[in-house]
Structure formats: structure tokens, C-alpha cells
Image (cartoon, rainbow, N blue to C red; front, side, top):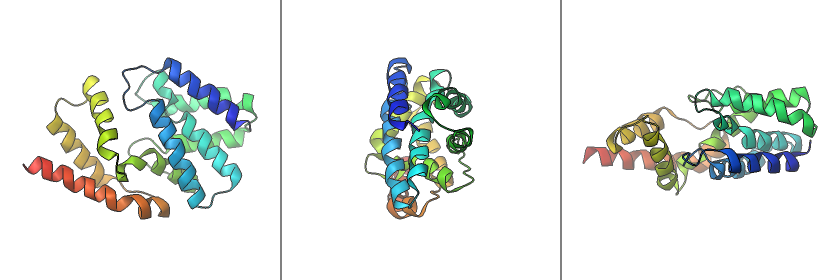
Length: 193
């Protein structure tokens, strides 16, 4: 598997071709998820091969946004299936990668440990200090696309999402859950004003 080369190719493609209006689903988000997947994967003790598969899935997981936001996970899998054979990935490895990509679809429903790791990495920011900064990028993107109409609606959406969301891996639960709960309380307090 030539991970380094495929990573370079896909990140360059995303940098050049992703719509600049995507303030959240950007190359920065992909790199953020890559960092998180590497940290969680190592902490969870996955094998070297599985770590490469996780990182590959992270690189591709939002590539479907090159075409459309709707069903972007399916499109991301199509892109992975198109590119990965050229870089020495087997059919079995590609299917594992597509399983991980599909596990990031909201509501998340991972079916195995690797899928849980990518799902947690994709939403790692929920339990970090930069939650509000990153959330602001998502707010701007959702406003632009007319998904939400106001900050109040955004805060209600965030509360609903955070209350339903849960981390899957021991690592994410240990390192991100408490901070996520604090963020939820802050947003609830904002709405109560």
C-alpha cells in the first residue's frame, strides 16, 4: 500500500477542487481527522496495517464533497474504489476502508473497532478546546446552504446532536467525553438566557 503517495494525491485534489464555500468540510477538517485517527488508533493498539487503512479512510472520508453533500459518504467510497487499486490496496482492504467511511455517516453506526475509531476521529473536536471555533465553521457552512436560518436554530441543533452523540472507543470516552458534556452545558445556558 502506497499510503503516502495516495494521501498526497487526494489532499492536493481536495485542495484544488473542493468548493471554497465549504468552511467546515475542508482540507483542514481532513487533516484534523487524520491527526485524531492516528492518535486514537495508536492508543487503541491497532496493528500497523490497520493504522494505514484508518489513515487512508480518513483521507477519503469526505472526498464525496467534491461532487455533492448529499450521500457524500457513498461517493467517497466510489472515489476510494477508483483510486486505491492503483496504489496497491487489495479489494478486501478497500472494502474495510469503505466500511470506515460509511461509519462516519450521521447518525454514526460503526460495526467494528476500526469503524468506531474513524467515527470518533471524525467528531473528535466535540470534546476539545477548539470546539466553538470549529463549530463556527460548520455554522457558517450550514447557514450558507440554508440548512439553518439563525444562531438560535444552530444552538438547538447542537444541543440535539450532542445529546444523541456518544463516543465509541475507550480512548475518546476517556479523553473527550467530559469536555463534550461541558460544551453541551454552555450551549444550553446560552439558549436559557
